[in-house]
Amino acid sequence: MAFPVAALLLATNIIDPVVALLHEAQVAIFGVIHNYGWTMILLAAIIKLCFWPLNTMQFKAMLKTQQIAPKLKALQARYKNDKEKLNTETMALYKETGANPLAGCLPLLLQMPILISMYWSVMIHKDTFTHQGWLWIGSAAAAGAPYHILAGNLAAPDYVLLAFYVVSMYFQVRFTSPAVDPAQAQQQKIMAFISPVMVGYLGFKYAWPSALILYWLSFNVFTMAQQLYLIRKYHTNPSPIGPHPEAALATTGASVANGKSGAAPGVSLAAPVPVGTGGGSRAARKRRNSRR
Image (cartoon, rainbow, N blue to C red; front, top):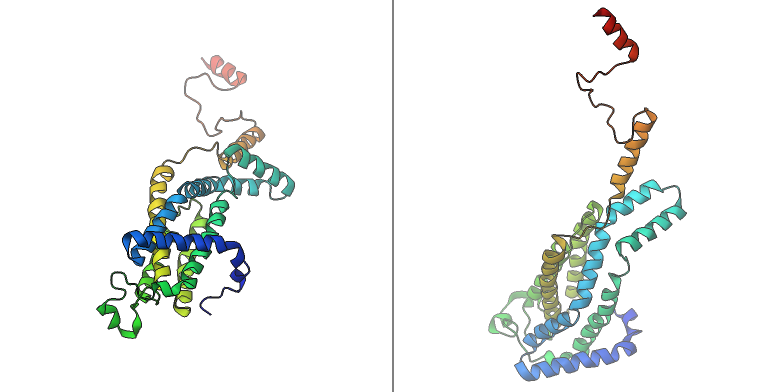
C-alpha cells in the first residue's frame, strides 16, 4: 500500500470527477509543453491562481482574528466567572469587528478535495510518469547517485526533492503566517517543526512519486509568494478595530481608585498643587492674615 488511505478510500467515489479533471488537465498541459515535470509546476500555478481570492479571504480572516486576540483575552479575564456574559460579549466583539473564526476554515476545506484528488490522479496514472524526467530526475547523475536518493523518473521517489519540500513547509509555516499573540507565535514555532517532520517521514516511508512531490513543492512556493504579498499589503498597516478592552479596564480601574480616594475621575492624586494659587483651608488663610 503506497499511503495510509483507508479513510480516503471512503471518499474515492465522491472525488472521482475531480481526479479525472486533474488528470485531463495534466494531459492537456503536457500536450503543449511536452514535459510532465513542468506540467506539474504549471498546474500548481494555475490552481493557486484559481484559489487566489479564497486564500486572500482566508488571510484577512486570520489577520483579523489575531488582531482581536488581546481583546478576547481581556474579556475572558473580565468575565471569567460569568460564562454567559463572556459568550455574549465575545459574540458582540465578533459582530463589531467583523471577525469570523470560521471564515479561515472555509478556503482550506474547499482545497482539501484538490489535495486528495491530486494524490490519486498521480497514483492511479503512475505509469504515465515512468518514462518522464525533469532537470536532474532521469539524468545520468540520477542513475549514478548513491542510495537512489535521486529519482530515475517522475514515478520514482526523489529524496532530494522531498528534502526541498520539507524545508519549504518549514518556511511556509514559520515565516509566512503572521502571529500577533505570543501564544500563537509559540504554537506556530512548534508546528513549523512538527509538520515538516511528519511529511518527511511519510514521504520517505511510502516512497511518494517525485511528480507528486514536485507539484506540492511548487504549490508551496507559490503559496509563500502569495503570503508574502498579502503580508506586505495587509499586515504591515492593519486597520484599526476599535478601542482596546484592556485599556478600557485600566481606565475604569483608575477611575474607581480615584473615586474611592475622593478625587475626581481622571485627575491624578499625585499631581502637585501650584505655588501661589491661594491653596489651603479658610482657617489657615485667616492665621496667615493675622500674622501680617
